[in-house]
Amino acid sequence: MYHDFMTTISNSQKPYDLLTVGESMLRFSVKADQLLIDAPTFDVAIAGAESNVAVAVAQMGFRSGWFSRLTNNTLGQRLTRTLTSYGVDCSNVVWTSEDRVGTYFLEFGSAPRPTRVVYDRQHSATSKMTPFTFDDTLVGKARILHLTGITAALSDGCYALLTHLIDTAQKEGVHVVFDVNYRALLWSAETCREKLTPLLAKVSTLLINQRDAENIFGIRGEPTAKIKALHERFGVEQIGLTIGEKGALGYYAGEIIEASGYTVQIVDRIGAGDAFAAGVICGLLENNFALGIRYGVAISALQLTLAGDIFRLGRSDVLQLMNSQNSTMLLR
Image (cartoon, one colour):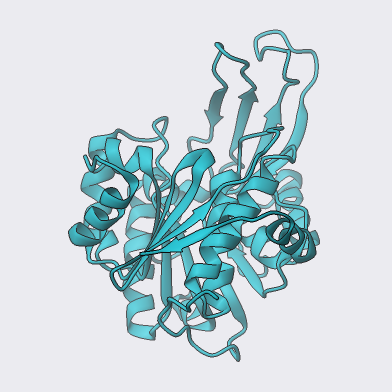
């Protein structure tokens, strides 16, 4: 029997269980045995950390909303049409006739050749978000607000927006889940640490992988030592730490929660971290943080078996996986 490790999330009468903001892009990928430099065709999909989370949470049966600033053309409309088709409310997107929709290009690697990402997102409509882009009363309409370090890295205006949203959420009593989600192509580790440190002390739940704990914040040692050190540094009441194929750890009220990983035949690595974040959020919405860590590991494992960033399975698939093998979790 698992304990409920969570502070109480606000009541379910709000319009959104989850609200998140960020950049969604068009993803152009080539087949696993091809290179970007000479591939004759591309597979096109929708991608974006925050919108990935919004879709997965909606697929688990919750009311999910995503907002952003997008160029009002066919490409921008493709983004919202796709997200809406998976149950995500995009009605709060701010449309503009200016700027552009961001894109990224993906080349899958096979050992020893690495997977490569090429961003083409400078001067995108989303990168020009500021604290004045949206009506901040939107924050109070959600039970949980999800944010990531990716948005903070896009521009000074986006960083200011996240700061404003976190402060507004604190005033409104809205639970903030923050995923560090470091992208070396967007900013340096030093800048990331400098910018995120003052924000993380204000959030309710922190999500991070152990590589970023080491490289961004200099926190080393065994995973249990890392997660305790993260709590000591930032004072965050709940922390989720992913540890690769071994699964994930959770921290709450001095307790360490361990959720073991699954054996996975990997199809596409992109989006697995967002799937973990979505699982944690679902657990929080069900008033069970420990269950959220288990959801996160399961949804992440399933996402690794799917092509593309978006989680297209449902709750029944997640529960079937969780019940299919003796996935263990230790509390100590």
